[in-house]
Image 1 (tube, rainbow, N blue to C red):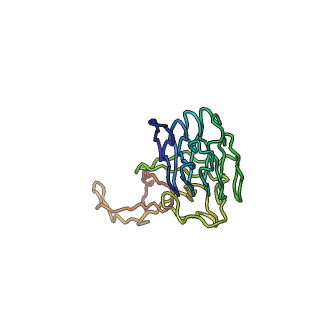
Image 2 (image 1 turned 180 degrees about the vertical axis):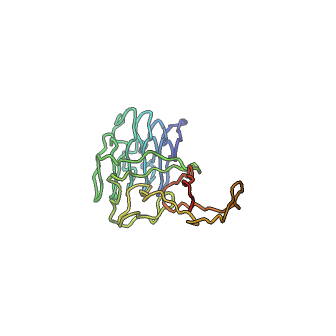
Image 3 (image 1 turned 60 degrees about the vertical axis):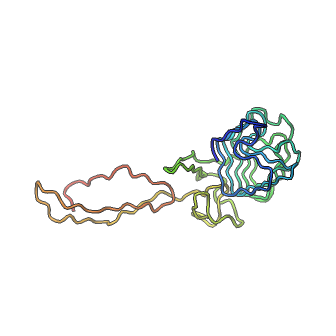
Length: 239
């Protein structure tokens, strides 16, 4: 969910306005905007419930209150967070309407946002008022956004409990260890490539002649995007 704007009616919930029972898993909410609740609004007073599992919510803005989340003035807990990153969201008037984003923790979260006057009770594995240290967002060729934690992020290998089997881009969890990462994305191990065949035999080529075409296959074998910009010609004599 990205670059959505709520501008009509109450203009709450930039990406999602929930009035039912919602479970959001393995999702990224980034760069959304609303008057209140830059990313999500959920009306608990009307019976709405919201659970967030392995979600990354960052870079959302509210023109008034509720930087990322807004409870539609219900005065009740509006969301349960588990293995979720909530950081880097801003409101023009944080806390201006009282506690409007009361959160319940199921553990394993990184929460670095201003809670705008709301109390919060951390559970096992919660990291509060700690920067999740995320990589810059990468837009893939298919338009999808990847926002991994950095190598030194407290979100990396932070979960000891069972987690969702894959991340948002269908990368297996965990990667490079026995524990999963907090948020929508596992940190990938590396970009890597294999070249096949490893040796190409062009046969004898006389001066002024051109060899027969040969097939060279480059495969991306890592789990991060790979860009091949050039293949350098080896120095003579060729072997």
